[in-house]
Length: 346
Image 1 (cartoon, rainbow, N blue to C red):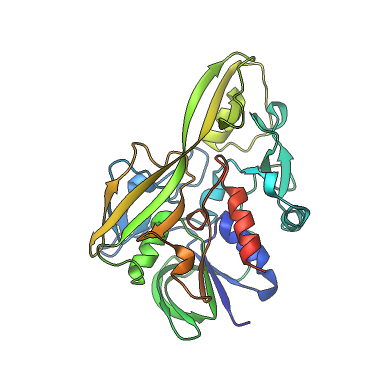
Image 2 (tube, rainbow, N blue to C red):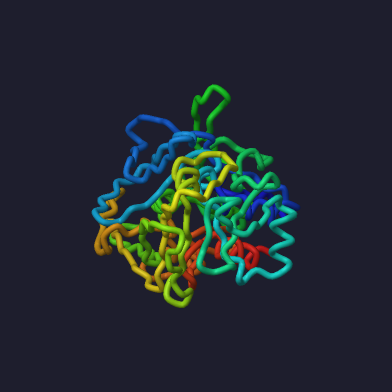
């Protein structure tokens, strides 16, 4: 097999990298992106940063006119894996997947208020950790890394050509073109829209849809709060110190459970769908959405004109990550990403 490129450096890219490791794939992603010029636009509404995390920014060259839709984009090495909670529903994992994760230095640990500050209403929800039982992060786990931003791709007969804005050691940028036998894309939804528009896959008047399970947060007081049945909703509970750790991105292992304040994240068995349209050139406008769509951060099932991404490309280009999966069970989405990659990459 010829050269393989993986676009993106987050959790999905890492799982892809481990699955393709024998082919020595290239990873293309900016270590950090901060460019102000007429080509790139900053989308502050897509940025998500925690107090103790490295600050990241969202840049591309599309204009998003969104009223109710909240999308997220961390254009930095490691992506969302630097700040996420690392939860995973292992109910559909077999021994091969569990062994694959372990061989990839990802360990699954039960949720417990005293050990990681959180719990759930079903025992199958675990946390993804590194060997030191810290929340798993992709940092410094790639070889063949290209510090660059992929502008677009051009499909050839047997290859895929990428136009890359590459950065040198002094953060100076210049354009290069590189050709690969296969290209695997695992980026955020804003970056995916940008890449597909620049590559002329998304055209004017095309309609994009995506979905998510309805979710919300509720504060509970007291140690004896009632846990909902799993067939009604999936719930993840954070104790007081778990909330601080999760929302500030603290790297601590002290979890005290004596303050009776809990935050409950609820995922309901109801999916909402949002639609946006490419109204002209590089402008995307919201057509329809429920208010606060995207709050779960688990936006999935990306379609263009009601066609799944898997039907739009040949074997030389494949899309992975949340956009490529269609969640069937509410709650964590990392398990869906892992199973999808495991099944599609042999």
